[in-house]
Image (cartoon, rainbow, N blue to C red; front, side):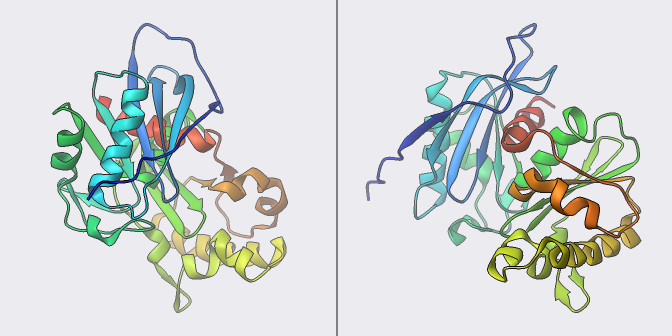
Length: 266
């Protein structure tokens, strides 16, 4: 069966950098609706030029998505290693869960898959929140913060990345932790706020309950809030009542791309 072509969308990155010493990497961030990538200056964490985006194929089967990733890479004529983020748990090179993507991913050998579509080059594949956490910890809101730093992405669910002195503890999936008898993401995601038309005050109370549960388990030094709602952090972060400081993510839409490039470089 022939896959339908993926429409291409080119847009300006939130941050750009000139080429700095040639220490470059390449990352692709696979999302439920869009697959975007670009060249990353690994010394600064900034994108070199513009990122490039195609619509994630529907259905988002492994081969169809790998084809979209290859299209993004080919757009830049990039010949080196490629880092790829995926919306699910990846352990020992195998996709174990599939959030907002075709369930056919479960059990897929992602290194074999992307190697076939990308000419056998070196690949790194990791969870999308983990990639964002790596980037924010080194270049963004967590830069120069020692100890435990936790990135949380508030969107359809709650993604999590746990960093300890810059080292990632992968695949934490803390959005699925039960808090007060209910999964965290089923009470404090931004989707819950939208679906129930909650005020920022009401939603912040739910987020606070979740953050307190995380605090009691991990005692982080800093929470970094990501996801689209982080752009309005001034409306809800001051309303939180947990004890650990919460700051908005700074790399925004480029965090996954940067983290993926870091992962394959490291």
